[in-house]
Picture 1 (cartoon, protein in one colour):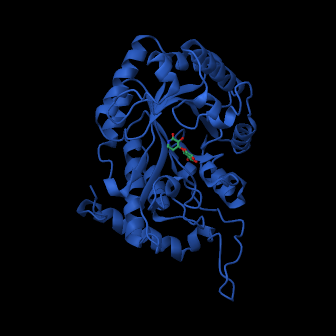
Picture 2: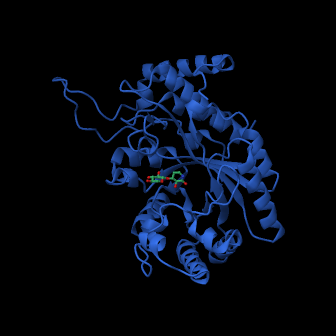
Length: 383
Ligand code: XIL
């Protein structure tokens, strides 16, 4: 299922992107210099706290009210400090984006080190930084099969206890950030690609699908203003998984469950081709009177020692432009969040060996063709 990197219908875009890249280089990247440089001995100098006057910013290029988001509070896969502690990264976060999602800081394994303990330090830092930057926060996530603490995974709980644990968690976490976290991915990845409920989710295993509606109701009680989403990957193309969500959401709505939106993660790979039916999927969810967001966009590619070629980068740029265009075309598509600032900190190489280079900024935090293509498509506005 490999897709050719160049396609005839992309020629106009490639010409545009190539011109844009040349233009960026010629103009010194709009005041932005790469984050590292070489001194006279040829040794690499330490990264200079960077750049960042890439004007107009992504947030400015997008239509008013449209959220352009990015993760912070992440880097868990690196085992080291959060990229938000890197000044150059933090500057890009602050300058380019209007929304942030905690990459890991609001997951159970971080928030719940022990059954009777909540640790809000990491998420507090994300929310406080976002508030200082005037950014919206999307919370992620309350009910998931992954990144749960050992005590939850290995403990023995009755169904009633599982229900009470989840209720307490949602009431406490959503309640703490009420009025500050504008949207929540309440339930994450609850279906397999075949559209079957994931039994490795311990809450679903114990309590069945009904717990999804309860979780949304509890989140609504804790913060009536927060927009409440379901969220998943591999829902960028029609199929059984999309159908399962459409059916579940219709059912939840019939029960009066206050669901507001559907999140399409958007973890794409150039190996699998462009998501040409993305707009039609967004339209299906919008037709249920939902907001839709692209919540975790990245576009990975096979990488070798030499790094991506120019053609690889232009091909990737087309994916970013496609996603922006599909979202722009549907009024109820209210935002796009990218899953990390730069290739320096992306989760991709750790999860998909042999693939990488998935984000809009490279390992030196310099913008890639994807940045320019994404920004231009946002700037074109609603079609
Ligand atoms: C990933 C993070 O980026 C990594 O740092 C972590 O080690 C694993 O989780 N879908 C999701 C996200 O909903 O929470 C995942 O984030 C990526 C896939």
